[in-house]
View 1 (cartoon, rainbow, N blue to C red):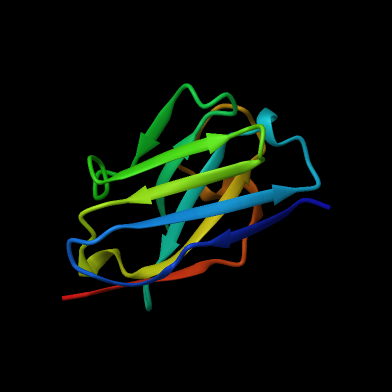
View 2 (tube, helix red, strand yellow):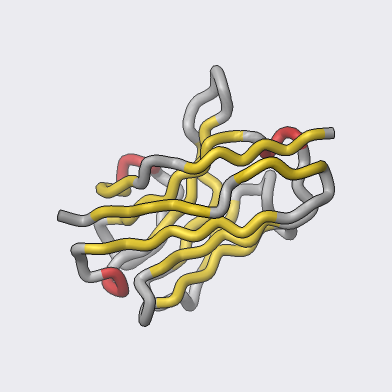
Length: 124
């Protein structure tokens, strides 16, 4: 059974930084694209970033482009999300997810395994 466990969330002031990590166990990590999504209170879950299985291609939501960086370490079965210049509107529960394919996608329906989420709160 594939399991994803996120860590690194917390409380930060606007303009600050956080690094989220997601460790995957029980599967062939490097074969599949990984993604980060987030869900704010009262809102739909939204795409944040995705990375190919090999890590050569990344894609971001317009709202985080230039501030967030997704990366992966296939030797450690981890995917990270470096978040800089955080804004109050970045406040959400952040989820990592594993896709069904190696190519990246923004569609949450293409991700089969999900972590439990980690809270990120950005204060003014």
